[in-house]
Every structure is written in structure tokens, then in C-alpha cells.
Length: 200
Image 1: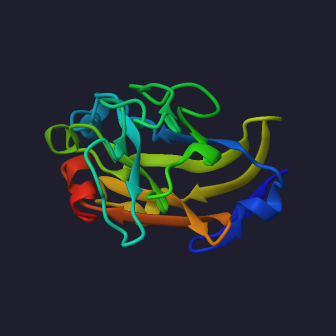
Image 2 (image 1 turned 30 degrees about the horizontal axis):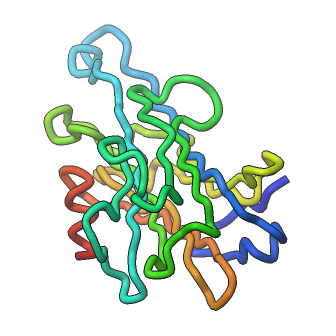
Image 3 (image 1 turned 135 degrees about the horizontal axis):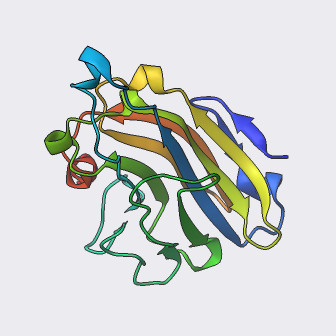
């Protein structure tokens, strides 16, 4: 059983999973039930929510250092092949992880100090959608060698009313260790590009 993290909590992946080489970062969510018929049903949003998970690779100064440093549905792998996005889920339907990103820690280039895991709502402005209608959102890390969950961070939807992008968690170097921090910071953005700009 993995550790249930609280917002802002940090753990050492090296200590929690000795010998850890590859981790799967799984992200999941559900969308609140749409309004039914009647007067208020007229105004219900009938479009699916398409949440996109991404990784922003940062250097020691906390900046995006190069083109290709963002792994997302339009760029499914880092040039080093150390970070691989397993594909886009357009609706969030089904149990378990909705999107997964595989990280080979030993192959992450030395100039990458932090991996920032984000989620944003695709075409959020056009569809008038935000995280206030998203529930049961979580990010979890799994040891890829034995499928054991190392840590999980569950987010509550109510505090993210109006937010359309979110920094879920970070994996970062600390000396010879890799650590994880549960973030859960929501932002009002038009898309992934706005989140990346914050690190430019």
C-alpha cells in the first residue's frame, strides 16, 4: 500500500522504493454527473471533459531549458526516451489511471533537475469548463518493475473552482536521491502553453 500524501508533503522515492529504476505516473479523474432535465438541465454542459496530462522538464534553475522539454499528447516522448507519455484519454471514462507517463529515472539527462506533472482541460474556454466539475482527481506513482504503488495524492474538486490547469506533483533530484512533492496548485489558463510560460 502506497503512502497517501497531503498537499505540500514530500517523500524520498529512493528510500520508499530502494533500487527504483522506472516509475509510472498515473493520473485519473471523474467528471461530476451532468444536470438532468428540467429548467436547470437546459444549461447543463453536455460535452466531454478532455483532461491532458503533461510533464514539463526543468533545469536546476527551475526553467524550461530546451525545445522538446515538454512531454504531452503532441510530443509523446522526450528525446532521451527517458519520459514516455502512454497516450491521450479523451473522456476520462473507466476506472483506474486515465493517463500514464513512464519515467526511466536512470536515463533522465543530468541537465533535467525537476519533472513537473501537470493537467489541463483541453479547449476549456470554448467549452466553459473548469476543475470545479472534476472530482476524484489523483496522481500516483507506481514502481514499474513490480506494479507496487509507492505514493498517491488525492485532490478535492471544490477548492479548484475556476481553475483550468493544475500542477499535480513534482519529481526532483535531491543529491543522489529522487524525491516527490505533492503540489495540487490550480491556475486559470487557456492551455498547456500558459503553464509552460510560467517556467520560461
